[in-house]
Amino acid sequence: ETERTLVLVKPDGVTRQLTGEVLRRVEAKGYRIVALELRTADRDLLARHYAEHQGKPFFEPLVEFMLSGPIVAAVVEGQRVIEGFRSLAGTTDPTAAAPGTIRGDLGRDWGTAVVQNLVHGSDSPESAAREIGLWFPAL
Ligand code: CMP
Image 1 (cartoon, helix red, strand yellow):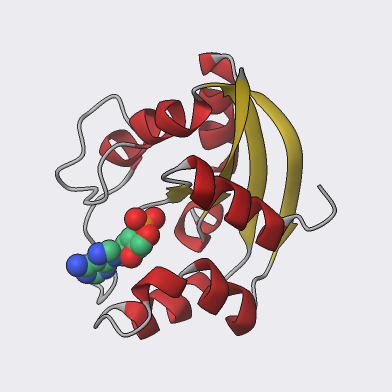
Image 2 (cartoon, rainbow, N blue to C red):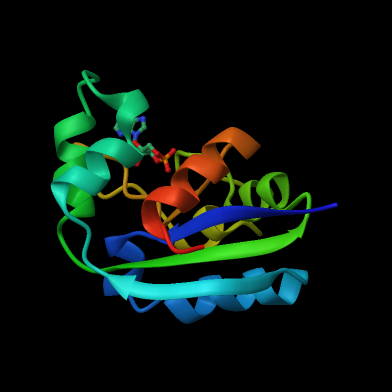
């Protein structure tokens, strides 16, 4: 059956005007965008979104980075879309991510404390349900 995932174009992607490119790839793959919003996050939302990273050395730089500009948040739907979007996104480290992926084609290391890797995608059905509830409570 179909499932849903939360996709974020992080502030580096929005600032670099890659939102259209990211959404184009999502749509070209055949997934459906069911909710879409440009917004600036706040600390409370980010602390909840990244709860599993609390206490890690990159947590504060990660939150500061995610506050540094607007984010495009989307709910994307399709069969196996959680796995499928993570495949489109590529691995966390954009320098090592495979060409053909969003991070591999469009991302690189900028020497910052936190890895700027353009996009977020939920990593499991449980994460997707939790994250969609945080970003789109009305859905
Ligand atoms: P993502 O996997 O979308 O969510 C957690 C983010 O934390 C990750 O992308 C990177 O931006 C960042 N991150 C994860 N691991 C590290 C690390 N070891 N050093 C710096 N940043 C990291």
